Length: 151
Image: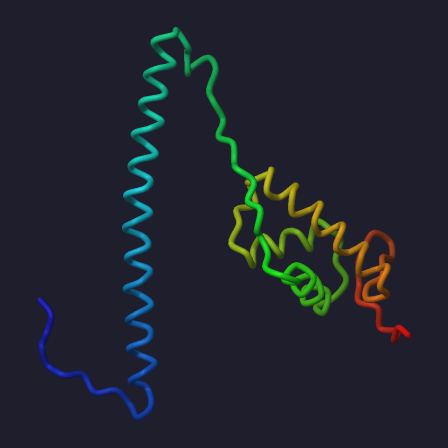
């Protein structure tokens, strides 16, 4: 049971604490919605499995791997370029390293190979455009910031 007594926070911390409480409540609501959505998806998959078994499909012999829809908007305007430049500020990186750090920052699972491949293509194109603009250099398969000023 919660206490009804008033909690006093240090001067200036009240807004911060209430903001954190509000954010936690929002995330809890999102989690509950996600759980409900997951339950619906599980029911739909179970119904499809049942329908497939009516036609003699054997899930044990032929397991069905999940596929992922490609998301169109992974990045906001110019976000990919900013991420790449920010990553390269910490030192030279190869494309694989850049992609891994972008996936990590965006919270995308490394195992999602179709998304990883799509982002890898986008990173390579962005690096090529930045190289053409003189912002980055490729040396021995590693990309780095161009320290020389461009005219």
